[in-house]
Length: 549
Ligand code: GLN
Image (cartoon, rainbow, N blue to C red):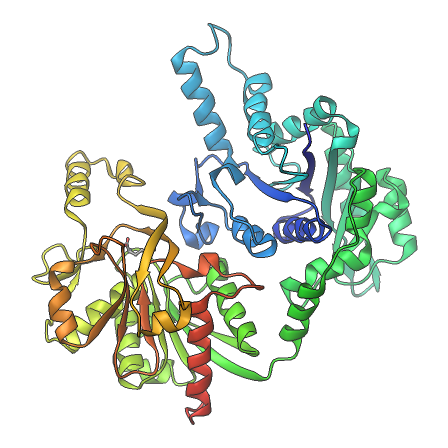
């Protein structure tokens, strides 16, 4: 087998940026001409994060093949520029689900099913499923922190893989925290020592230690860590805090992380070409303008819930040489009376995706404000649905128009559940079995969309057909399509068979566009998404035209 594996574990505490570190290392290896992919193993019991509340877990990232995955997969796509799939994300729940299904089917021939070997074998086969002749390196990030009970089967599985695959084919990287104690004026290595001790007690000896730190670690500190943790002196690296996440690949390169990996894994790798990363960082550090984008949503207290959105706006800024100031506005606090005050600083207004009725009226008020004051507006998924409702109510006079998600008895369900999905949901409600509603009724993953010429959407994409990712149940109700058209709404993106509305715009407005899909999932720093690029472009023009920021 050709593929070599790099396992990335984390110690001391969570939120050290393990996903970003793994994505950055993968990007460096790719820049060295290697064929690289990356996988995330999450120890929690949910089969996938699709059922988790964004307030707790952050964004649910959706792949082309419709997998609802951990938000780190978004970083992987953004840093590596390659699409992720369901096989790039496993959870304990999914592993156990497979093993229990096999057990019920009688696959284990009457044996006792145990964590070792059955669960660990299933984990190993999920990891090895990435191997192929077309892949040089597969990085595997283990979620959570070493010492977590849930993580043990994963650590045991990756421990076994070194013996299974051989030393030259497996590498362990451990990310820890080296805190700087201000009052003492020194950094402390003890948490790292303890974390590595814990890892070694599970049979894993790390080859490389990445030390997250707010200061650059001197040789003496690195040597001390090497000595206590039994790694090469030149295998301890500082992962220093960066101002911008896209600086991390260059930071790790300057430390020599990728070179050490290449040596330890005996990879035939050329010197990396990092010019595009250098250009990106230069661009981020030297913006020619600053603009304020208001994000009117429900999950504003947890920025992780809008991770891809935040990144896609940043990319749109990069494409326009502009730095974005993010103004997160809680839609539950916005009313028709205070909307002008809430959004007075906004050069552009974005209403993101979401589920449930909370905050919807605030979003609609924000859209009225953007429409009437000719402020660039971008509505995504629920944001597009709200724009449609706003137009129906305030331009077409359908004052009770709504989405069936919020009002099943509305006389004008301009956003609705398509018949077959509606029937399915009704059955679920009758059986009080709402959980089986999930998945089956969601439109998930990539769908084609045909772009109408002569529209803002076509100006952005400059192509007649695109593919975009979805995650929603409700759709625009095409029974109302003609009435909307007559009232000036433009349907600039439709499914190829024209039964699903994917993009709407309004005429006589600098830039007002809503899309049923999630363009933020496919935006990349090196290839900003065309709709974000154009939205930021319009917001800049709005600012220049005298709107006060
Ligand atoms: N709640 C809406 C629906 O299910 C929108 C979903 C979203 O914004 N992702 O259709």
